[in-house]
Length: 155
Image (cartoon, rainbow, N blue to C red; front, top):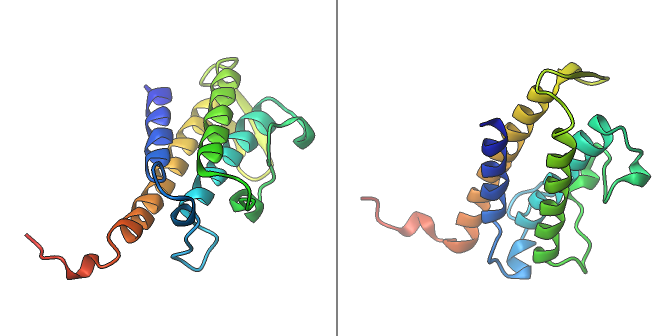
């Protein structure tokens, strides 16, 4: 059930950006680095940080992409396409599923920032992370798709 909810939130996040033009995917509608494409990029990094680095114990050089805990997780290169970033997130998610399958939900590791955490805690934290960012993506998508939404009649 936990893994299904995590997958649901992964898909919900992707859905907020799928079908956007490359320029709309990069539109800065808030002062932060948050754009539809950067949310997906950040989510891929979160997968690597928690599953590849923390649970699998890999060095950053062994990960399949950026895996530092900083604002670089939102950085999207000019030559990266939305479909490529979605594929990157899906690939990181698949690797996370494989790594998570090696552990029981109650297995624990010590994290310098969070204390002792279980695999269950990690999965729930990822659900929360991706649900929150899907909400951000929904708002950005609404601003992109219906920029004059305040002019619409309310039922």
